[in-house]
Length: 585
Ligand code: NOJ
Ligand code: CA
Image: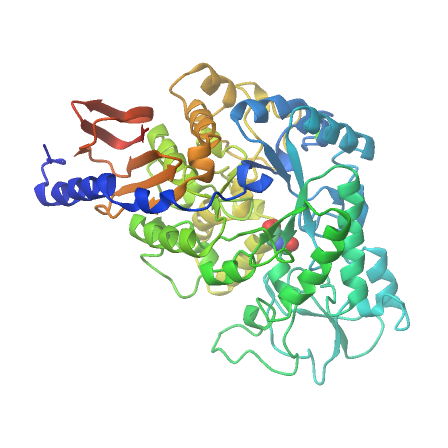
């Protein structure tokens, strides 16, 4: 047996030995007697997240639309996803790109019509694709008639749909909102009265303590389920309960209104409020799937939110990307702090998440964070890195959620000036760092690396002008990344073709339903096993710029997928960021 990994004997020894034990341990026979688990449909789902504004424009206004998504359904099918999640498409003033809903029962004209939507659903069903809608349920737009009426009339039947408080000498408390400034905005009607908004002032929070609100949102869900959607991503649901307003955030801060999430995040009433809503929906549509957005949740919280049939089915968080922050600047919000991928951290995270959660979400990012390759400062222009990320993430146990473009190894859209960042989070950072006299160049670098707008660029379909996305300059436009689908599709070694192979494997019972075991290895190797009905898969990824090698002591294995990997005489050679999937029968 050889165990020289890049000349480092000790590391290679440890690695080799772990593979040896992992391959021969007794865990499999222990599992033989286990009961067969009945899988729910979402346990076979592979989600492709589409940011509708940026996927495909068909009417030349530079904004993606529903007919554009319709046109591209065959691509999603060929990629190997079977479920689509659309970011919000309801009528909205677009203060927060659709998360501020003015009418929950109609399609925003920028995306098309109800007929377009119905055609999309029908086609999805023909192609055996399920459709999930994004449901912003913590807040509405201030243009929603409920709020319009409630804010103009204290006796409105909708007054109690929102959250009001009286301030003495100013705002009711010092709590800061996610988008900067106070969570309180002045009521247009009453002196000293304020309404609550966890996000933008144009997005008043709904009062979920009011059963009518829970019923109203259940009615929204049922309306879309009747049209054939399979479920919802529940936006910001962890904020639907609030603490007693009669207290300040006492954390020391230089801000007048320090962010006070603890007072309106993960409070005990969240689950019962949600359970009431889910129960009402499931009474009419028992199979409805709920993907809860709990961006800040740790594994324990995520497990608590997925306990019973009246909880979410799965919870998606931004806390399992294996990020670590080597050089923190306390003046900069966490969202914009420089960070890197720590494999050690990722292993710790998945070991834990895979144990405590029934069905973890597997993801490298969403529309709320910059693209993974830039965010984690990974080596540029290396398709092997993008492939390694896919391999180490998606064959684990759980639900893959692939953010559109990630399958090309897409990089961030880049902007030329600070003023190009018009999103709330970017604007808040600009205000804060300018106040602190940060140089503009530093600001631009931070924004281009971490701001969410960098991840919302047009999908590059081809080498045509505007990437074949539109005939007009896209709504979100800057210096575009080099990748495009048409060129990659032709090339068998491209990132997108690799994603297709990974997702094809993911459809096999072994990777869908198999048990999961993360293997203890040297720091730069990520390795795990899946076992199902007498079969075992071993997935090994060398996440480093140096080659590695290990020995297989089992005879009967075959390679089902390899990137930068070779097997000869039971020796596996992995080049930089190489990976392999082996199966024994
Ligand atoms: C989470 C969404 O993903 C984000 O884009 C949005 O700004 C907030 N929730 C508020 O709805
Ligand atoms: Ca359009």
